[in-house]
Image (cartoon, rainbow, N blue to C red; front, side):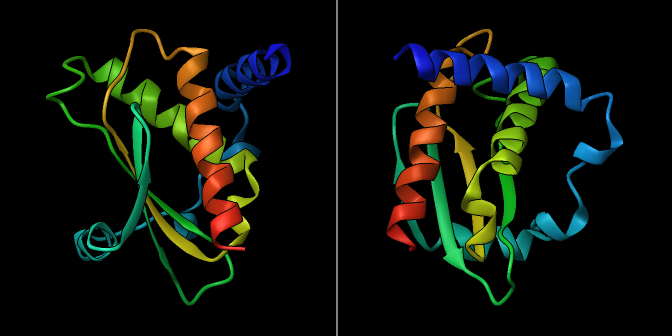
Length: 135
């Protein structure tokens, strides 16, 4: 558990650091660019926990693409939505799931302020489950 907490702290630190480094960007080829892509992915298989729901679909590319849904209904303030999106992008960037050739849409189902280590652990566990499922 201590290792997981240290990992979550490292991810939060990496999110803060990534704001200042250009090499840690989120390139266009790793994004789902259109609403058609989102709609297609939202009709596919999913895995979830109390914080996040991940829809996934194999794509024809070598790397995975990510889409994020963070609704205003759950998080009124834009700063909270943007922080959640940054954390999700950073976990995606650091995780091996980006090498699996999937289209992923991560939907935030519930949040706590600020983004807690428990939420980071839950999302990491979902990425791990998804990676094992698609291996």
